[in-house]
Image (tube, rainbow, N blue to C red; front, side, top):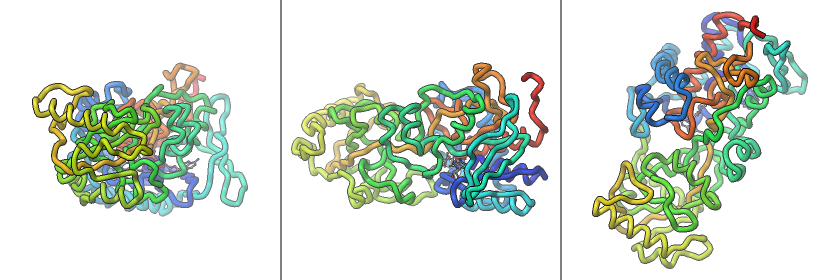
Length: 438
Ligand SMILES: Cc1cc2nc3c(=O)[nH]c(=O)nc-3n(C[C@H](O)[C@H](O)[C@H](O)COP(=O)(O)OP(=O)(O)OC[C@H]3O[C@@H](n4cnc5c(N)ncnc54)[C@H](O)[C@@H]3O)c2cc1C
C-alpha cells in the first residue's frame, strides 16, 4: 500500500522510480483489506492513541482527505463514509483495483516494477543513502542508484524472532494474520543505515482468532476474526477476566498475549449471538455466523444450554469451568444492578444471561507491528545518532515499516500507508536530500 502509493504518485508527477517487490505479486496485506479509515478529528486520535507521536497523528488525520482524493483521482471508487470501530470513519475501497491501478500507472509511465526481487543492502556514502542493491529472480545483483529510497516492506510481523524481541516473548508463537513476506527487511535495512527505532513496547495490530486453527488460507483472516469479543466476556486459563473487552477486539488481542499461554475462553450468550456473532461487523460487509465457522474449522468450541454446564467443561481444555461459571454469574448480577465490575465495561454493560452460551477458545493473531523506523511527517527516517531528532539523508519509510504513530492503539492501517506513502513521494519530488549537516 505504502510503496505502490508512493511510486505511482512519483510516476504520475513525471518522476523516475523503481518499485522493488519481494513477492511474485505486488500488493502485500493491502490486498486483504477493505476500508481506508482513521479518526475524523485530531482530538479523537489523541483520545484513542494518547501515547502515539502527536505530529505523525495530526499529519495522518490532516492528510486523510487528500489520500482519499488521490485514490478517487485514479478512477477507483471510495464509497461514502461509514463509522469504523465506533470512533473512526472511512470508506470501503476495492483495494485490489487501487493497487493494480497504481502498478499499471507506474509501468505506463515507463517506470519499472521488479517482482520476485529482494534488497540485500542499502547503498550508502558518508551517511547518505544513495540507493539499494537488489537480488533479481535469476540471482544476479542489480545496484539501483536513487536520490531517495523508501522502505515499505510492511513491518516485521512475519519474523517470529523479531516479534519475540520487540513485541513479547510469547509473540514468537502467535498466529500470522497477514501476508507472509513482511519479515522485517525494512527494519534491518534501516537500522543498518543508523535509523532510530520506536516506540518501545508499542504493541501490534491484530485480532482474536480461534486458537489452534490454521491461518494458512488468507480467506480466514477476516471470516474467523472474533470481532464480536467486544460484546462477550473473555477468561484466561486461571478463569478470570483481565481486560475491558468492550474497548476493542484489537486491544483485547494485545492483552491476551500477555496472559498465561496466551489463550482464553470467549463466552457469549444467545443475545450476543443474535446481535453480534452472526451480524455484520461494519456496514457494507455481510454477516456470517462466526461461531459456526469456528466450530467447523475445528476450533475448541461448545454451546452450553446453561451456565451450570460450564462446571463440566472438558478437563483437557485447561480452564476452571466452575470458576468461569461463577464469574459470569457475578458479572451478570453486577450488570443487572448497574454496579461496577472488575475489569470495568466502558461500552456494552449488558448482562450475558440468555441461554444458550457460545464458547470459543481464542488466541491473538498479528496483522502488523506498531514499532518501526521512526519517521518525521515528511516520511524521512530519523537517525539514531541524533537520538531521533535529525533525518538520515536519502532514506524514507512508510506504512508498517514506520514506527512512532501508534502505541498500543490503532486507528487504521491502510490510511497511514497511503498518507505517509504520498508524503514520501512529495519529499522525493521536492529534490535531493539536504546533506550539508553531515
Ligand atoms: C485480513 C486483513 C484485513 C485488513 N483490513 C484492513 C482494513 O480494512 N483497513 C485498514 O486500514 N487496514 C486493514 N488491514 C491492514 C492493512 O492491510 C495494512 O496496514 C497495510 O497494508 C500496510 O501497508 P504497507 O504498505 O505497510 O504493507 P503491505 O501492504 O503489506 O505491503 C508490504 C509489501 O512489501 C513487500 N515486501 C516485504 N519485504 C520486502 C522486501 N525485502 N523487498 C521488497 N518488498 C518486500 C511485501 O511482499 C508486500 O507486498 C488489513 C490487513 C489484513 C491482513
